[in-house]
Image 1 (cartoon, protein in one colour):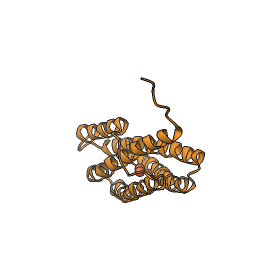
Image 2 (tube, rainbow, N blue to C red):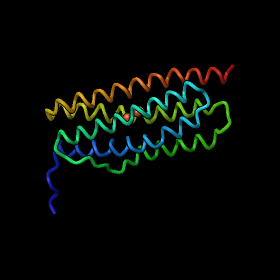
Image 3 (cartoon, rainbow, N blue to C red):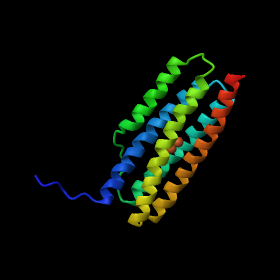
Image 4 (cartoon, rainbow, N blue to C red):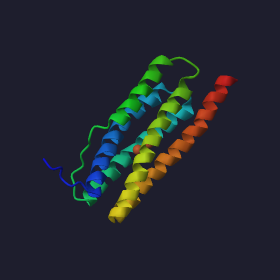
Length: 164
Ligand code: FE
Ligand code: FE
């Protein structure tokens, strides 16, 4: 059987489904990370980003709408693996002074995955002439980047405390 010709539109839709699935998983995971965090600042960062993540899901549904597709997720093994590693850290480092540093590391892996996806989707949306989608994807990319920077700061605090 001859493979059907796939286009950049197909790739864009597939990747949109991937990050849509991932965002929904992240939405369920952030409260658990907030609960596990020891420092009030880290707890708050996770709670704030949980709220932002609701907006990310909402923006993605708008992007689906813009390209005339129904919002649908597609299992993303990458995010499931990253989340699983985070769970492992919570279990293994419970009650340890290094727990927060581990949570920051796990969360940064999530943010970097998102940044990679949104960066790519934004470039493809540009290529495909979906200008409104570019703006929506860029807004979320900005929030992921800002969160990653905040986590870097909180990571320093966490490791400094541990050293003290
Ligand atoms: Fe997100
Ligand atoms: Fe995020």
